[in-house]
Length: 417
Image 1: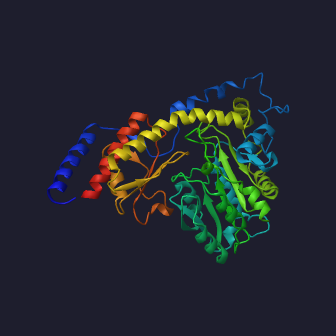
Image 2: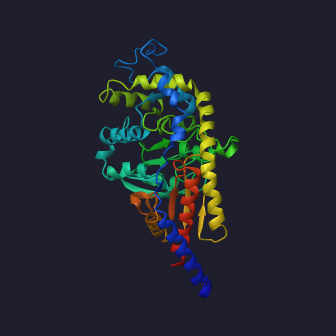
Image 3: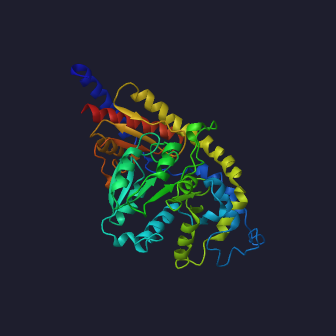
């Protein structure tokens, strides 16, 4: 676009942008928070336990101490979701992020079974698929580890890069992965890449895969397809003779109540025993009343999957209006490209290089907040300054449309000025 056409377009865009500014909008697409409508779906959770029905299925008084590993019915619930045995599951509090932090901290201070503490081994490096989850990166950065970006392929991390790095470098101790409907790209790790993660040769005997299975039941569509299937990584690690390689995490934070859900950890028998050993010094037992609430409300994995269809009915139009508006505003312009996720909570958007920070700043000035540009990369530094994470779950359908039109206007302004 050059000459008079550029000038005319800029005038129109500036007028349109000012129109949004004048509306004094206050829209927030920064985080993948459930909407109030989604939280209302689990309102009955609070009514499942009364003073007369406080005991668990095995007769445990859930008000009291004990039950370090969680109630049997809660372990069975997550075993169904993870595809593991109940004995391989431990139930935590409400936050899977806390379980991840605690697991890394235990390895840092005490070492994983049979190995020296990571905190006493000198340099520690960590593989970080990008674009990825900023809170993952924050945990390992907080411990002073060196973050090593690894590109994603649409089917998980580039395993040629991963295999080359871990084969020769004993300082690389782990990799973050959101294996299904990844944050923010929406991709699922392929069965072949699960196999390669389980079988690859690592210079570090204490290398671990941190498998944040946050969105395993978070489909956006009823027609779950083959590409949505996630292979069983714990089984793959066992078959490869590396049963201790993977730690699995998940929660009901975006299933029931975001701040009052259940979190769970799954791993090999040896890793479960190691975790319980340290956990016994940390707590006398988790919140078993909340475990009873969840198991009575959902009953089993099928109950959760049915519940998640109701979530999808609320989320699907929110995502669709964002995708439709992006296509209407930016389709064919080559100014941006974006993912079309089949599940999860995010859309990953790439604008022209060196434009993302300016786009986000322009949008904020017009009353629409997005996660800070660069957040999807280690230390918040996107080397090309082009990725923006969109989170459509919290705003209404109408608010998502408005926010996306503001975003598209800012993308065009940033590209043309």
